[in-house]
Amino acid sequence: MADLTWRPAPRSRLTAASPPRSPKWRLLPSAIVLGVVALVVLVVPLFAELNEQYVDLAIANQPPSAAHLFGTDELGRDVLLRCVYALRVSLTVGVVAAVISAVAGTAVGALAGSIGGWFDRILMRVVDAIASVPHLLLGIVIVAILRPSLSAVIISIALTHWLTAARIVRSEVLSLRTRPFIDAAIVGGASRTQVLTRHLLPNVAPQVLLATTLMVPHAVWHETALSFLGLGLPPHAASIGNMINDAQRSLLIGGWWMSLAPGLLLIITTLAVSGLSGVWRDRLNPKRRTELTW
Image (cartoon, rainbow, N blue to C red; front, side, top):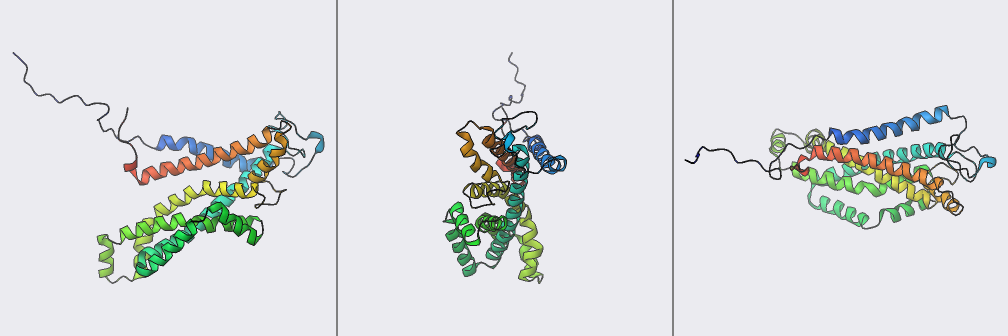
């Protein structure tokens, strides 16, 4: 006689919805890389016997060795030490420019979303007009007007990267304006300023922080491109873009290490920052993560 007892059907590995994997393990590699980079940037200059501008033509164009781990450039300067100072400059520019961009974009987006109407339309058309111009081209124009310097690079990056934050904040504010707690605050007598500062901005803060973190790698690459084109820091200053630009001549004589070292440091650092941003984005938007495990 057949067994008619009900049993649950076996769950397929493709259809079973397993809990999403915790992003903590994804956070670890990026955190380790950034920790090592921060340690090197802060510690190496303290124990260096010479500065990054020390010239010794007797040891020019030497390949990597125990004395000079990343070799020396055409003027006999230690490539590792120059990479450390260059990375410090690039990260400083990236963080400062990203923070300024986030503040400006948050102000524009919050005003456009909270006021609405013709004011919102005008601001968004201004944003669209600026976004239609390539960032690098607009940055070159701004630096050329202000004259190449560290402050000019920061200003040019900030003025060309606030658009993303403005659009994100405006979208979040428009969504929050329809929530019941905003209506309750208005009925309770809260002014438009109080609604904006006490209810809207605190709720968009995580998205603003995420946008700021995502802007840091873009700002670092922007600074590198400007320096590579000769519109960033002075040619003698330690900058990733300056080092890669100087290394072009050395490639003809086999000096591969002069461009490889700064290029690798730039890629590894920006990928680590992007990795942290990706984990944070997944935590803010868990639905974006896949629910299937193989």
